[in-house]
Length: 319
View 1: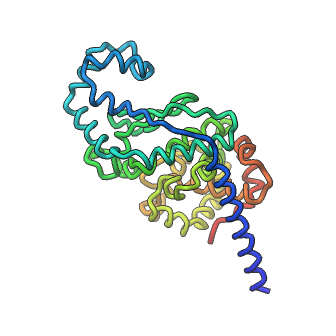
View 2: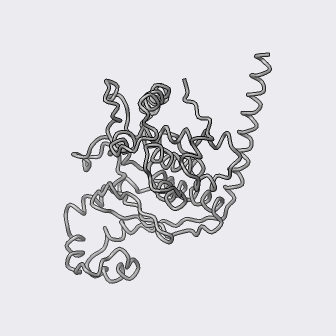
View 3: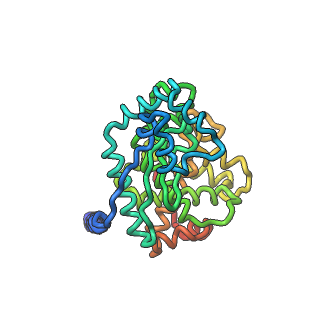
């Protein structure tokens, strides 16, 4: 009987893989063409006489409150030149990133028929790592100086948990996170569970929109961090349940378990080993369990409240 059960599971697995392959094949046929506008290069190689043309082509990148002399000083600034040189060297070939963005847009267009392909423009931003990518209905901005590589010397003084995701492989993941915010609906978060499910939806959105990247890239963990969370999933869940944290309205819980941070704050010895965002990870697997155990359209799920998703998820942590 055990062998029969194993064969059934194996058949279900291969059938699911076949369906996924068919879906991805269909999505890959979506008519999408992405052109990357390298404003960063245009500005880096400009001279003061080029400024009017740049302002005409990219008016939204030039504030009317800033005098032209400021932009000219920036063109001539030695530090800006060094930054631009590093960006140009790191992103001399942008094909892999463009291909990933094109695939993201194909998935967006497949799931949302109203989606329009935006202009994709690369810029530099004085290493503004809090705004690495910006998305609107018509424009996508990518600050390439925030993706030069985790160990780049420009990032000295920035905490490691931030710099580990300042690399080119994270660009499409950050863009998917931006886009997810347009589709997620949830009441104002009151409990830890609300926050967990919100970010669980965001990460599941990445499952659907960028299935070609690893789970580690989706959540911004190293492979070691992801493996640690997997190995300790049942202990983490027990901690949340025994302390009745899921429905707690304690505002400090978001900082302890949801926020991007060097580690999560259990106030135990294991804190130093844990990565941040453990609440996001647990919410992700609750949402995955919900989608596995309920016949619900993906986009409809994005609108459902946290309690309904949790109650119908049948979630059990891995042991």
